[in-house]
Length: 177
Image 1 (spheres, rainbow, N blue to C red):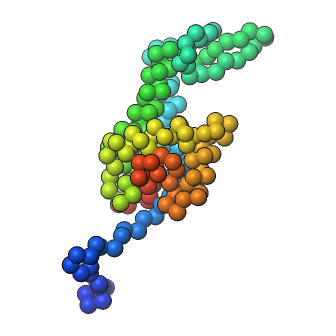
Image 2 (cartoon, rainbow, N blue to C red; image 1 turned 60 degrees about the horizontal axis):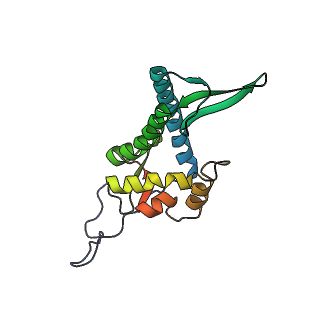
Image 3 (cartoon, helix red, strand yellow; image 1 turned 30 degrees about the vertical axis):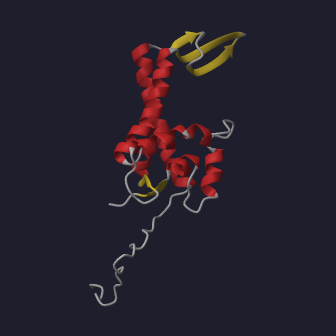
């Protein structure tokens, strides 16, 4: 059934059309997307580790991804050390920045049906994606409870924005189509 054309109100000349309404997404679904992205990072870490080899023993670099464990009184480091670790960290930043800029979301976000847009609903540019994702470092504080600050900011925002979203003027919404 078609709507009655007489019942539809159109903006008069000089008036702005009504603001679009969005289905803002909160912490739960964004967390699921982040878990999916974490699985993808595990695969990336495995690929880099296979290509360059895992450092076993010690790591003298300030840049590392891995853990130090003690077995029978011997302390050992297992993970990526130096440039392979830096490559992994760079891949992580580029993953979020480039995919959100080019596709409107990471693979995790797209899998759960959400996307990132400007607060006006338009696709975001590289600058917005860069700002949003650089501030992810602050949103992920404190490290003892990752993303606690980001979650609190999302819960207290009517548009469900974390710090990175607020600074970049972006929103996370349901992906249509």
